[in-house]
Amino acid sequence: MAGAAIVAAGAFTTFGGLLLVPLHEQRGWSRASIGAAFAVSMVLYGVTAPFAAALMDRLGVRRVVVGALLLAGGGAAGSVVAGSPAQWTAAWGLGVGLGTGAASTALAASVAERAGAGRRGLVAGLLTAAGVAGQFVFLPVLSRVVEEYGWQVAAWGLAGTAVLVAVCALVALREVRAPAGVREAGAGAAPGAAGAPGVVGRALRVLAASTRRPAFWLLAGVFAVCGASTNGLLWNHFTPAAHDHGIPATSASALLAVVGVCNVAGTVAAGRLTDRVDARRVLAACLGLRALTLVALPLLWSPSVGVPLVAFAVLFGLLDVARVPPTLALCRVHFGSDGVVVFGWVNAAHQLGAGTMAHLGGLTRDLTGSYDPVWVGAGALCAGAAVLAVVVRGDREER
Image 1 (cartoon, one colour):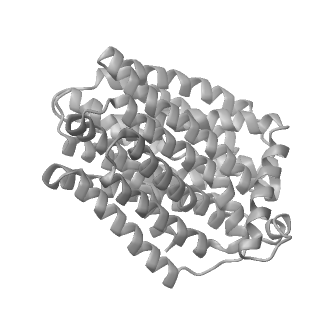
Image 2 (image 1 turned 180 degrees about the vertical axis):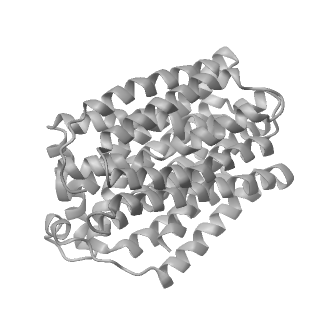
């Protein structure tokens, strides 16, 4: 059931790429203004995660997940009736950003933390892979619905799916108590409304303490680049870029589905490796290889989907979300029982990078008429992040 909640929340993140062209063509909004709404959603997705992780320790996973899914569904429904870029940003940016932020990364990290030593990397990899695979399984279906019936119908479908999964989570999701050290770190108030100030206080105290350590800034910087090159760029601008080269949206969505399927193997493998070897090496390898794929992409475009683009989708998919298990492990190594909340803040940096790239990608396309500079620039950032990943001191502690 946790995996289903992650999948449902994750479907919203890939849907954005299908909306850019229809909104631009039907309503005359600029790509930059549409991208700004995606940016708000992604930043809130990240900022919400540390508070959601602390709230799950206090109120339990089920309550937080149900509320988050209902909020995301409301945001999707509100986006249908939005009549201006500002209203669109309020509905999609606020509703979907806050809802998915509480039901995706924070949920996977919290459940993985409860799995125990020796299994955390694998559990994090499995849940992350399930969410991302689900995103891209949804994508061809949503693409077909957008093409045949319009994006509004697809948005209503997402809203209904979120409500359905919320009801199922309320009935079927079983609470698992947090480890003793985590409960003690967040203790102090009884569950319920009175616990909200304690949750906010804990998240902010963890942030204040972690920012005094270089490891936090290195991990946050690396993850910001990860977000810029995946959520911000690939998930929002791959389909419009394919459209520029004459590739139909359904074919572009099929390529992204390949990315999602390959995410399963790549993320699970990264989780297994993280339980056994230095997490820095796993993270650096993922980023270095990702840099090569992004720099090569402008050379691979063609009016039809051929072997080069399929190869890109396979390789990028193996590397896409594989960075999550090693990053979560490094947060645990350096920050102990607060590692899940720290990971939430690191993920906020991830989404800040994603939001920035979502906006800059559309702006670059508006100004230059091409996405090619963005792919090459993102590849260069990934190469630099691979170096930073190695710099993070790797203590050989229990993972």
